[in-house]
Amino acid sequence: AQSVTQPDIHITVSEGASLELRCNYSYGATPYLFWYVQSPGQGLQLLLKYFSGDTLVQGIKGFEAEFKRSQSSFNLRKPSVHWSDAAEYFCAVASNTGNQFYFGTGTSLTVIP
Amino acid sequence: DTGVSQDPRHKITKRGQNVTFRCDPISEHNRLYWYRQTLGQGPEFLTYFQNEAQLEKSRLLSDRFSAERPKGSFSTLEIQRTEQGDSAMYLCASSLAVVQVEAFFGQGTRLTVV
Image 1 (spheres, chains in turn blue, orange):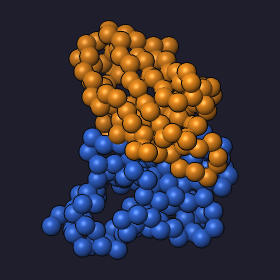
Image 2 (spheres, chains in turn orange, brown):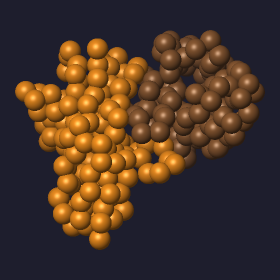
Image 3 (cartoon, rainbow over the protein chains, first blue to last red):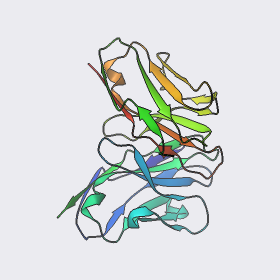
Image 4 (tube, chains in turn yellow, blue):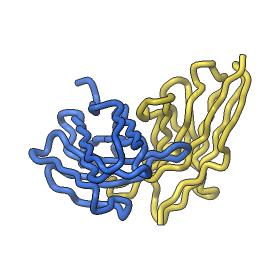
């Protein structure tokens, strides 16, 4: 069965510092992977996606993620965090028919000045 | 197109009452999904439609829950005889019925059952 694990419930970083949010997935075939961001009381906004090809994918707002099949990971990174990046981040894997998305429990990011 | 729209944004209801939520997907999207998100958790799949056909339902979707998409455009999610455990954010998403596309989410309906 498909599943996503986000080991870090909460992360605090200083503004301007680098960021890495971890995501591990379990899926039998080639996964379709996503990172979404959610601000309080809002819906989810897509940051980036991986389907195939280059394992380093670029997204919006300066985020990137790297797919590592050997580690079943899809970690999200940003070289310099801005205060506006404070939010909840969700990693997701889609079934190969695209009819379901399985989400992790999320990582809450706090940015301190 | 302004994206996926959900109405209402917030709903407070008394236990035992029925509630109905509406979702308007992105106009050219023929897939529509409903998810439920409780505090501190990621969204959990409830059901999805391709056009007007409801193709999959999660076991989370009890008999008190029903979803429709009568003309393959907007969708409604009804909860009958609400319980306190139904309090959650209900998210709607839409996508094209093609693999390798992402789902676009609405802002959700926050349900509080008192």
